[in-house]
Image (tube, rainbow, N blue to C red):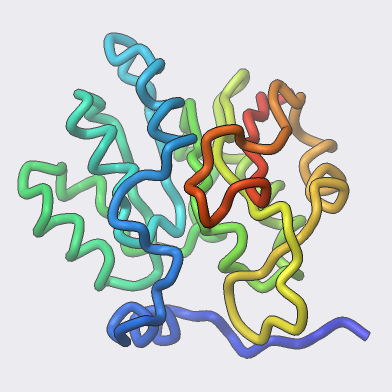
Length: 203
């Protein structure tokens, strides 16, 4: 029988961010695999980038400081968006979206979607819809890039939720070509061997 979880809605996330010790995934900056990926992107092309379920959005902050100006951050809860605005006062306010990722229209076309602890924060029953929505929001040839937990968290009653690369492949295969789909070589020590770095191109 499939586990039924309570709604992880805006109120849930706002309360969780406001409670000390309940944002254990927050490492105070972009993780090394994503930082290394961002460092090799071409700023001159100014791709349109979406970071959904971005939390405190250290990735957006890092990209902004590299010179990327078309970075959109979307989150259900206002607290993390406010935290980013406070840390980076010149981040474009129009690119801070208090929004439900699944309600974003496909007319919002992006070149790149960045995944960092959003997938693992969703009710696992939403994973097929996540893959489908990422594909819908990308321009032809666009990419979904990021990290997924390649480990199980037994009996988890709330995020993060784990899984396996075999499970994940089934979600993404209908929409994407797999450019990279393997264990991250440069994870934080606490996550070493338990993170899957993905680079998927819209088929």
